[in-house]
Length: 580
Image (cartoon, rainbow, N blue to C red; front, top):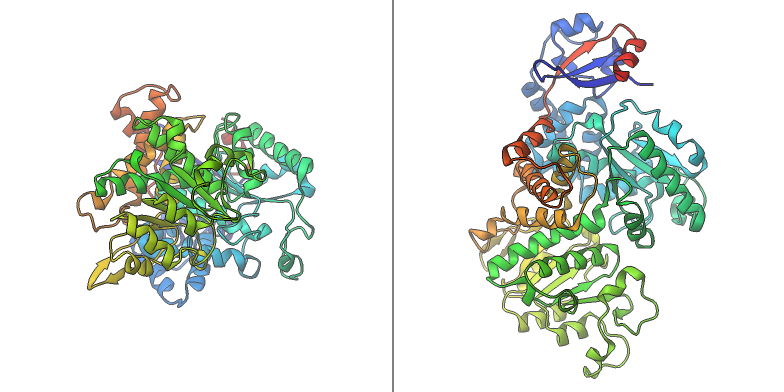
């Protein structure tokens, strides 16, 4: 049942929430609820007198009270549960708090704490959020989409829970990821939470521990695969396209067997992208561009070794190739600078087991024929013979960057660029403290999960988190603001270049490669501007001046402040206004 409508007053441009809810029903709707910040007039109009204390509180006072409540919880998972509870009560207060303390709260709302929250999702579940679409309901998806409160959805984040972070198959417990991503869209990218929808596509799970856990509440059978899975996804996409033809769909944490296929199949049918493939690629390229500026070298001169050749690794590799090509290198020559190592060793063109999405990055078998190595060519052998200047880890293998491997790399390049990107922390390929010690403080480091500052030889190093939250909120803001219907590779590269311009390391080489998260809203707007500008160049957005771009962005950016609530006479009146 629809309970509210978000609209702007045509005369004042003021955002207004219209609802037929009254009394405790209004207080229990988190988009409508303002707590003690309801004005006296709103309290009378909505039947709230006596249901709230007499004080009319400011948002500032509420923030102080909410932050004090946060500090009363000792562990990150307890703090995560507290924040989710706050979000379930009052969305505006939750996002205002998140923005005010973004650097402290982001690791609690998202990585690394979200990993544990997903693993324990069926234990800490409190209140419904988002939409669960199970395989059994595949013929009722239109009906399910009609059950959400707000009919005007602008961003959807969907997962099937099969490859959550570096953890693996969590089934419906993977819903914590779409919920977390939506939180970042709103906190960083200015998306009003009423326009966002997290979705979990429940096709079962192959996780035996979950199937045997009495608290697990997903489908209790092995994952649906093959044609049945493909047909289910087609039903889902078709239903989304019918009901929300202008929405942005973000594919999130799908296994490599599906990730590339879904992206290629649907990216031109509706505005969609895969954050693990494209968002991760853009943020890594950002770090590399900034690192090259610090080293005063060209990206086209680098040899890049990957540990991990799944959807994330190949997505990053593809974006690096595009960046090298944009700097003047031939595409085939750029690909020859990419060396990918997976569990079976270096990917070579005589390997019959490779996936289609890995084929562009196969090295000719003859290049390794003179290495004198029999059998599998692992990371150590590749580092020794390729002598890379860049090492990227997307393997999910904790401690995979051994001391001997890093010291071997450091012998051949004075300033190695090392990005251990697997998360959560328990899956990270190496810890920054070790990397600095093994390279005598010379490595340029960015990690996939958050690490505290490191001290080496009495010097403090702030470790950048190579976090997709730098990219996708601004990308989403651009897509919505300019009504862009296709996410091109050029737009992603433009986002990466724009973000690299904000790197603190450009001014001080020992500073982090990425800007502080405290600037997240400014970063999102900066990225959005670059994306729209590139979309205009490619003919994917209406032409307009820079001033028009800035205005579009500001018009679509939500400030996480209370707006006026207007009570309607009835549900019928609400429906009539929705149809206008």
